[in-house]
Image 1 (cartoon, rainbow over the protein chains, first blue to last red):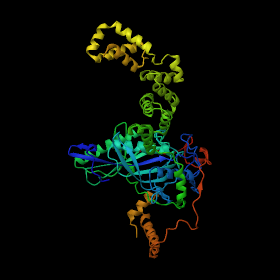
Image 2: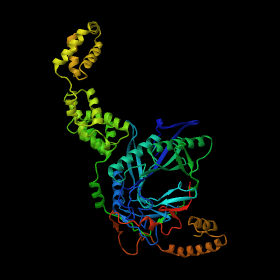
Image 3: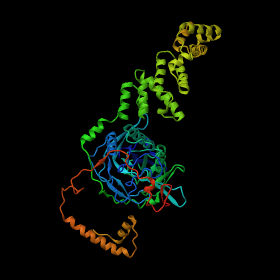
Length: 489
Length: 95
């Protein structure tokens, strides 16, 4: 936390350099069929109050009973964060009043959380890696949803989300820039999605961040922080860190001081503003929930869950670099989503793995991004892309024709091998045919021949002509060799 | 340990209980009486004693992850003072 400041991350103020310090609380909705303490559905959407049991509505006499799967999901996540798993944890009541919290308290874990300290390795750029410490992970209930725009005088309350299990994942203040903050959330989201413990869908609110921002002079103790509540996209998290840090620097440089407070980020205005109503609400009067016994399990339970975990992104990335010989950055891009990694492996299996990586990352991902599609809805399947890579390595088509072929497969579909036949895209390796084209070009351009003999870089012009003559299908290597021989250069 | 009148007002506010000014001194007395009664417990030496979480030695019951329960929106809002289209409706609360 007090490691020397990285000069490239400092912000230049009017009176000198400032260092940003960020810690985050991520609320990740646990993937489960039913709620943390009731048998109501967790399904997103649905008619108002249709996924609500009398427990979630806090009717008198209702008692919470814990969902085994939610416990397992929290433990799996803890293992994925290389964190300490606590075999005994307890539930507390966090007391506050709001219309979408019918109990008048949230059941949470205050004193002893289910997961303790861990860490996340984050690739910030192609060449920079940081480690963000995890302070704790605990289980808690989500609240309901209030709609304020349905009527001028009333708020509408829907309890469908009330009681859904959340994991609150608290980081240490190890983040030093907006870029690092974005990279941390991106990596955490990747880990959760690999584990299958949270779907990571930020639009639907399955992943929300409270961002704690403070600034300080490099090397000095931590400054006063402000908490920016409920930021719901990775891009906004970056923006919120930047504008909040600049706001604080502005105040400090004018000789003011920062008040510790809760703020909201307004993406439309690009500013944060104070949530006055939260100022006095910080007295939550936590106490142990008398309705719930301690949550206890043994090491066998943890080991059993660990045994069935999928290969996680860090391990997969290391394996890709080792087994396929691809660069760290490429491997990082490929493992970002499990589906992408699986797709790549299907293409790379038994083929030139580096060529496969190039095709998947540059051609396929490039095109998917452009069209706003994800890998699952890619019009080009792994077997089709694999066939294109095969056709290149067999010398049937050139790299240039391969891009045309990719385009055809993307828009029309079909078997690449058959397409090459029916559309006459095969590379001409028949030296006779290429030789004829070469001879024709040489015969037609005596002046250029003389130029080329004086200046061998003119060869490129001849290559271009021959390729044109053969519709781009001549094997470039054969063309080069023939031209050199015939022109005597 | 004892509470002053400001604390009484604060606790009442946090619990959303309307307490009139005239009631405050009386409530303060009552709360302090309870606190001094409880304080007698601090005379007991509990060094090394685990906090009790249940009067019977039992483990928490876990349920399977299955959707087994939904009351139905009409039942959920049945006792609400006010509702509309299956929503609870409350006086406007807005940031």
